[in-house]
Image (cartoon, rainbow, N blue to C red):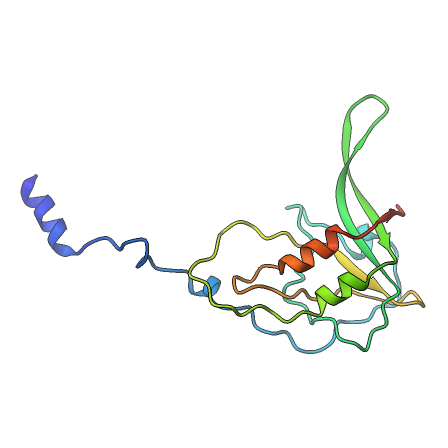
Length: 171
């Protein structure tokens, strides 16, 4: 047993926390997505146009083209699952469509550049992504890409702006 332990010790040492290998993907900023978001003209509902997957997550907005200045935004729609109490006292998880017309702070956050500040490590939790759509005055809509931090997660400013929206539930 002593010989085995001595042999293993001679093979090398374990890396320290400072030397621990990192996931190359996480240490790199997300690539900038070029182009403009696809403008769509027919909106039906969150369930049809912005479905949330079986895993409870919306379509990935981190890989979509970012919002520019050419699309005039009149209001935003945030589709999300929320608990709704039934008459019998139980709860159902329902998809709601919330609309907000005061979108100034949201648009400013969506137009921020990606954060490329170097970091030593990234956390592994699943990032929160809003199921966010932007509408023009004539009803046309886009799903904008989101600015991200060095670890590829939506910027905190975007999360704060979405959470600060005054949403009116439509459906």
